[in-house]
Length: 314
Image 1 (cartoon, rainbow, N blue to C red):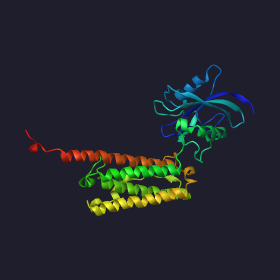
Image 2 (spheres, rainbow, N blue to C red):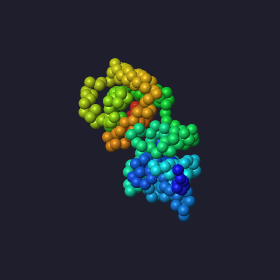
Image 3 (cartoon, rainbow, N blue to C red):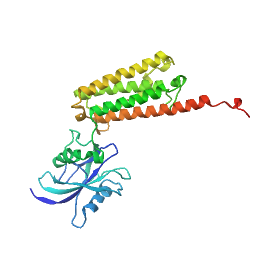
Image 4 (cartoon, one colour):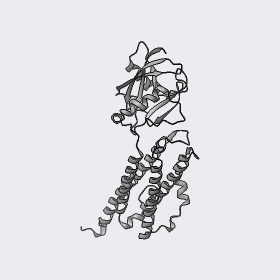
């Protein structure tokens, strides 16, 4: 094994903790996925080469980065580079990889790279070693199933508290740009969770590998809201439905605690996505609904307590 020089690598960390990997079109890493990397020319420093990675191969502007680690980076022929890794979590511009250099790029959770991609062995070992040990410093630790279930419980509790705080009459009034009432949004959320649950079963069993997002427009066409009237019985029915599907989903997650973070699907555009990430997106959506309920509730209270013009004292 011979050392062919020094290389600069960019550890680009997104706000959700995912890191950027690129698939090389040609060169010593052709067909493999690595961190964005360039060999350091004799007339440039490692930092100058790093800046070339950002500007020339990814088309982004980065003003702050810092040295993170060094690794021996072996290419497919067995030659070895001394790699200097720099971290970056703040940049401007949309990442657009150089298609002459890279054939693909994607965001992955450290330690949970899709099995479908061929990650360079040196990079894979490093990601599962140094970066996982230091992930608290750069915010890249993947969520455990236990932590996700706790987060689900916190999110659901906040949602139901926000709903229960709504005036009864407001629960059936349209409160969003989507022209749905709070009760209708809960019905939609329950159906989304049932869809998530059923798709997880297929993905975990291997009978399905493609993730197709919940189609809310199709759902709206199929749903008949004419029977959804403002009664305590309907409120309880919707809330009990939410409890039922949440229990089913939590049981499924617990039963597959050891494997769920290693299962990947591919979305309809061909981008790999992890089941834990899909769950995180669902929880985020639920939190947004809770926030909208709180805003709608404050607006409803303001409307209810604001005197009309003809009742105001002159």
